[in-house]
Image 1 (tube, rainbow, N blue to C red):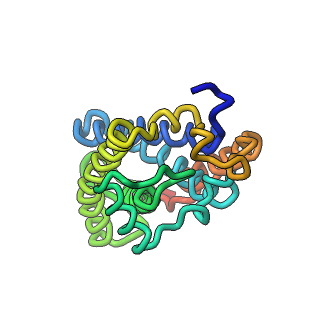
Image 2 (image 1 turned 60 degrees about the horizontal axis):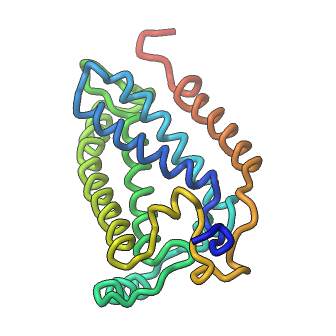
Image 3 (image 1 turned 180 degrees about the vertical axis):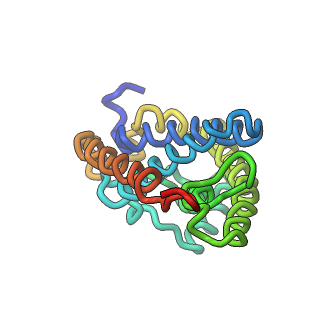
Length: 231
């Protein structure tokens, strides 16, 4: 299929975010399992992912058409109907996220945000203390530590489902979702001319990224209270 037979749906900032998040989740999971010898890298990856997630939340409001959350809010009825059609092999190709994909996006973002925020309050009393671990009671910090260890399991489950769904759509339903997340384009037969985006709004994305980076630096370096006994 030539470029003229395809239309742009996913902007460049969204695609870069997606693949950076994929690599970051894998790296965070790996360093978390390795343990104390790479704890510092695990912590830095957490800050990096916090920035990525904040960027996505903002981009979900100010980004291009199909990146905005308002364009793919799932409902129970639409998700159930789409799931039944998928099982029958009758689900139509979607311009942006399909209903199940939309649900996956919101669930994954919620879990990842929970994971990185909980990490800010973790204190294992040996190797690592998050920047806000000493701003809360020890019992609260332990709660976040347990949450941090538990949520990762649900992230793995969702990631496996996400990969399986992408492969199913690509090979069984002949809807190349994986390729689209690289190129940003889908078939003109699926995307009407008035539904395609004409720009990736890169300058806007760079501004959002810069503001996000400054905020994360303030949050994890400047804002945390000093350690007990440190003035």
